[in-house]
Image 1 (tube, one colour):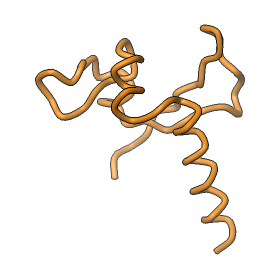
Image 2 (tube, helix red, strand yellow; image 1 turned 60 degrees about the vertical axis):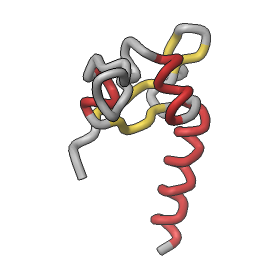
Image 3 (cartoon, rainbow, N blue to C red; image 1 turned 45 degrees about the vertical axis):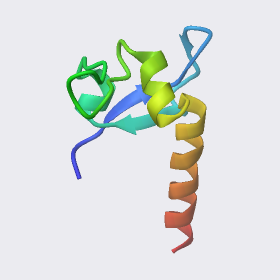
Length: 74
């Protein structure tokens, strides 16, 4: 597992707040790759390609919430 950076979810180009974040590793957060020469797509600055490959920020947020909820139950 690699260290995560916090990505704030945007709505209308603005941060939704500090509770609306997803963890992304450096290459997926701001590694700068558009996926043409590597196996990953960076969120910054390639939002459309990132979401096409991995899902929307909202769907990733829901996955993180589900994982945290499941972990809390154990």
